[in-house]
Image 1 (cartoon, rainbow, N blue to C red):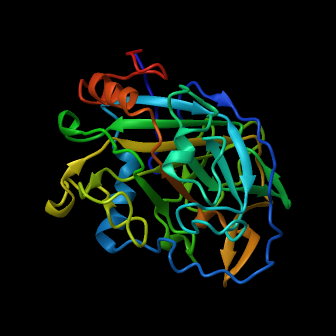
Image 2 (cartoon, helix red, strand yellow):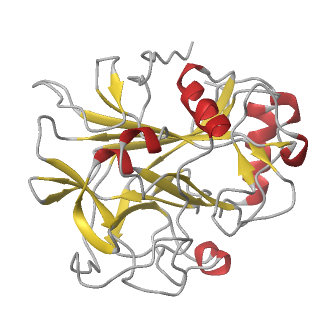
Length: 310
């Protein structure tokens, strides 16, 4: 039986994950240029904030997963700054090996992946973590695809669907309910970094929304086309998708932590933990993704990376 335990806000998880071996490439110097950050999603409204805060208490009734190694680290963001190489703050990329500022669905499908299964060519990324000014690659990442409501109605995420969660522009913890830091083996969590004790490691969960408008693959702010479930999906967003959830563990504890970010229009490596966010572009083999949604999500089963029940 597959079991995962969660704390009241954050959680520790029992999950098989692959060790990340990060390659450092293409970093732009922080603070080099003024950056227009206005197209990055901002703080959610009150209703969506409440729905996001409820996510940790919603356990998956069905799921499949991908375990992914780090691919590269660079100042790119093909969703928020498409075609603008080096403009973004520094991100840690996992999954698709080719993700850069000019990535398209076609280029992603032609590349390789660091994920198990290899049929997942999706691009995933989060801001780079720093400890005492030095970048830290994640130790492990698991990307869960979960049925958390209306599982029988969940549909296959369409090819090239893309969205961003979290508020990279947050100036206080209350502006980013998606940020959720915790320590392994411990249940409390915080929107800002935890000072994890010796013998534990820093980890973070990031939950993605599940109610899609059934039409758009993206939107101007990269979030309006898909919203968080709040007891039901609104009539404007009534197509149910599996919930993506990142579980990322870092081989660090203690203090001295910061993120790649953009503060007052300047790219920095000293952004606070409550600016954490994540991005996704779907580049799965659609046939394999359809099989997993049908046999795992719709069927109410917990599956592994091969898309068969555990």
